[in-house]
Length: 120
Image 1 (cartoon, rainbow, N blue to C red):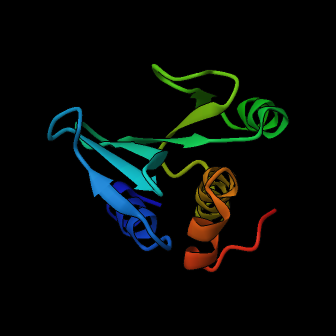
Image 2 (cartoon, helix red, strand yellow; image 1 turned 180 degrees about the horizontal axis):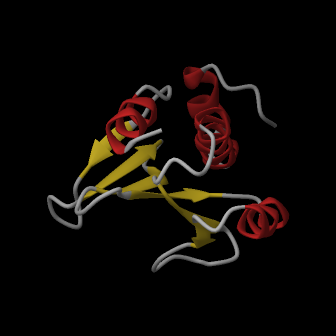
Image 3 (tube, rainbow, N blue to C red; image 1 turned 90 degrees about the vertical axis):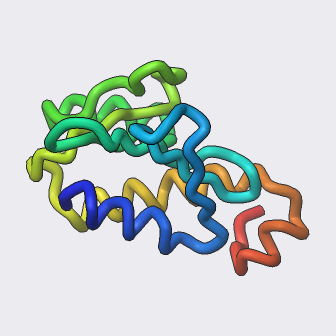
């Protein structure tokens, strides 16, 4: 999945809002006011940082050289993925969904219900 497809996929998540609090080179995606993805827009191939369960985060880092601890983020809960094509597109989509779900799960019930989310 290249950066343009990633940006489209991130923006298509329910309730996703794209913001640029760090300038034009970094797209920040939020749901319910909370960050679920950060996409670097400078350079090639680009990268995306995603929230991740700590156990899964470690497993992904072991499996893919393109997955590293979150750049300038809590390295236990965030991974940065280089969008070089080495991580399959379907797995990247699952990681985006996982990040979105982790953030939505922490939202108040009313906001989760408005998004159609069923997490506890």
